[in-house]
Image 1 (tube, rainbow, N blue to C red):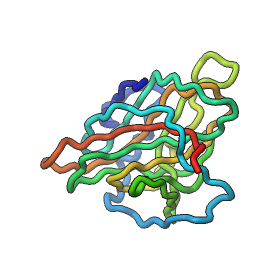
Image 2: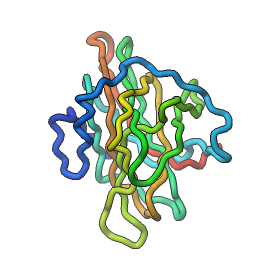
Image 3: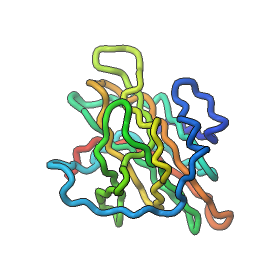
Length: 212
């Protein structure tokens, strides 16, 4: 089932316990695509995003820095799931630009130093020289518990850069502990949108890493 998407400017967002570090506004964030390399030998096994766990409705992108929060997911995780990939697909950008903020290192859970981008329908694994993790938080329910908690967090240390894309880009995250359910995701994006053409949209997805 698709759940609702809530977005807002960071400076107006007041969801206690999930707010990103506001110092990002005092930093200079590059608004041009940074260099990347396609990786062929990063880690012994790099399974692609495979089984789709969740897909949001499309939502309108907003200019400048924005926070997207999706809660009430209720996604049951198969036993033994240690990592998932979250992604956003940027649609109808035209001559506009949009991308995800690079933060590193994660402070809860972990993430491989790489990310995914879907090119011509195929996932490619890529990396940047300064760090390749996107700002995000995920919440879930630990195995045997009833209450949700943050199970992945990368929202403390900004690298002052973003990765621009007009495609679907995603980050594989290693969850903290054993978890039975995913309940929420929050992430940051930046956009410099054109007033011409179709309305720019975004779509969020969550995957198991069980692809080839």
